[in-house]
Image (cartoon, rainbow, N blue to C red; front, side, top):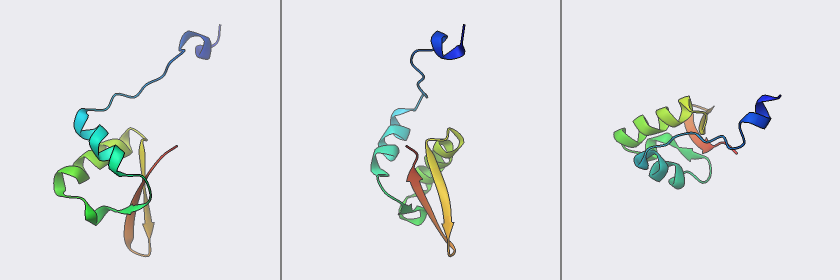
Length: 66
């Protein structure tokens, strides 16, 4: 039996705050547009592989993973 057969639905837990921040990131956005609390939540989302960071010419952009 394969693991895919055992796990039919794979979901990553996100708090309500993380969901709100995640909804606001629809395209590559400079991280300096977010306040300190939102940056903390974005770091949590990066650890969960929901959001990626990209350093482009010294400007850090965040964008959602598909």
